[in-house]
Image (cartoon, rainbow, N blue to C red; front, side, top):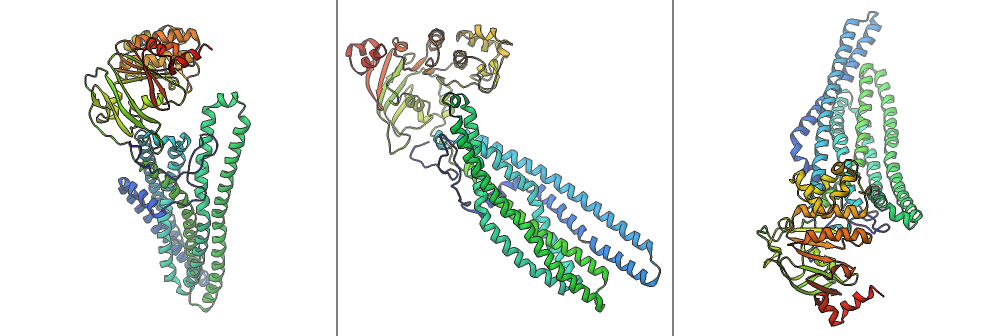
Length: 608
């Protein structure tokens, strides 16, 4: 992706400690609440049919339930009439009660079915979101991860997706049933008494006013809560991954202070948001009870006058309770939607971040390994160019060492060769073809890398080596391990090639890990090989073993070797000496030593 292209990512905040995660700015509301919900609704279109079916079941269940108070009222009227007449028709009352039981059972069944359907929809949406987020991770340019922590990306996959899933599973059906219940109950109450209904309706504006007041103050706290939750997760993940370093430098105290600081902010934001949302229920109940008192007084007067039956009063009171319930549910749902909107905005902001742009679609064919850098210019920030004018020609099969002080641009050059970043100017060619004309995947198939920081995953040694060529047979894996001088130590481990590496791969030594990565590169059989400080963190004896394995690996391949130990690259065909992003000298070891320039100074400094 071009460095000039601006990447729009979810809102970011300042770092919280070294390498801390990013998130929405403290106190920031969703940029566009309606747009976030609209995007979520659009995402739900795939599951539109089951959602509609579930909502129809919910509506049917509510409609059936609305008839229950009327039937109970009829039973009560029958009981009163029979009591006054001195003979109660128990058969009719029992039949009415049986009818009530049947309606309640049917309503419960419909409610179960709609809940079952929506639970399935919610899990499918969660699956799709996590799948899309995971796919997006592999499509984003490396520049995105320069400004986004691992914890923040994990937060998209866990906290934010779970928030959206919970809303779909619970709040969606509650919202529909609340609306249907509100409308249906209102119709039933008007049929009984418009005067008492008027009193109930007067409570609604008061309730809505309080809801809007609480929402206005709670929204920012819900956003903070989501942000700090991501930061806490990010800090824990980073400290766990770097536990050895933290222990080495006695950074436990600082780590705890950072954690407690973030956790305290999460606690305070969650406390405030939950406190405000918790206010709604008692306030709504208070308003509902006030209306209930007025209705009971007015209903008693109407009963005394004979304008309404006791059964109708009982039915109206039941409807009044149902009338207040959806208002209270709506208050809770609105609060949930605030968190959902914040989570959805973050998720869709991540999913809509620009993908890494492919400038070509060709796949390298019959690669020999000739590489040329032509006036290459590059900067991680376009305003700060660090590689100014890099030019060099590398013949197929030759060994090229890149040396220089820290920060000279050595590793950056091989990253550009692999197209981890795109250059700002100039050209890099492979066999005379601009690498920008290849697809990144097609280009990288011809490269192998052995880095100072080894990457092995939780799995068997066989699986880790086979990662270099996923279709390789067991025999090919063993052959690659023998070339890499790794077969001998592998067979001494419990289970041999089936020995399971843990998540940090720290149940084998650093040198053994390095040999496994070399075996993986051997299995890949690349045309161009990159060795970046591959022996810098091992002892001299292990270094000799690794060097022997790398010599076998480099045979017949174009090799780029980055090393601070200049004694290890004396036999290189060409040595590129870099300083401040430029090549200041180039030649073989003897030629450079004879010049007595910058390289000679670096080499001799090893023995001072």
